[in-house]
Length: 398
Image (cartoon, rainbow, N blue to C red; front, top):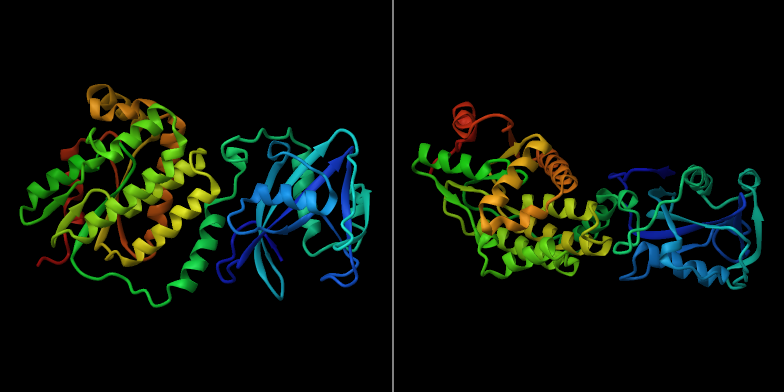
């Protein structure tokens, strides 16, 4: 079966990649040997991803190994990542397309195939094809009708057509379950955390809340705003100097900091930043192209581990607002405070990506944790406190 979304009841166990080669409305197909799986069926150049290999590098390698066609990553256009389920296996299949003006020289790999040929898309559908290849052709033909997308040189894929967050996380969740079956969830103190994009007002509201409930504490690690800290320096280099090499390190440093803050908080603490916000930031950074596929998956492995060890909060206060309003607030405070000058480089696109990612994370967490959603758009901090203070208080008091 061919799915455009991950099927959680049958998670993928590996990843494979395929490449459609098209010239003048014809597609290159390879006929498999009789002693191979799916004998005598026609397929496109494809194969499993090797360890530490990206999807696009796999496509370049498989295309060369099976046809002798050598392409650069910039010549490939990403079509999509799909979930394929057969009676024997479940895997993710990433599809690329390479369009030529003239027919390239093709050599056959006799260890894999017995014949190669060029077919029109209509003729392809009449052949005995590899499972689910028909659906792949339909996806590829849709892309051919459009203007090919320019690949982002940092990620190797068009920013708006890279593998989904869902597909990247699914593999890591499966691997994590296999390797950490005996790892137990953290247990301990009672705490509440906030969730929300920069500029949404969570700091000020929590400070007012602690004054209203004097037997509570507030945990707000400001290392990220300390110009002398390594995290702050890396943050500035990422946004002020466009140093993308430090994005992964920055997110991992913040992940550990958020975990440490949460793990050692006293009872009845309001924690302003936690792992959940770090996850939302990382998703946003991936979506705008500042984290590569492999970097995001590497980050997510650590997130899974720390989130498993972290005690679950009593509830999450999810602050949100209009993206344009957030953008205006952030620009205003960036001009007022030197320690926030990196925020001058935030784009509206990034703020919209952050807002979407925080909403997404809040929605996912609502399945197991109580979420109190607060829209701060055009409300003062005092008005927010008056409206929501009862919903934000602790259920249990030690």
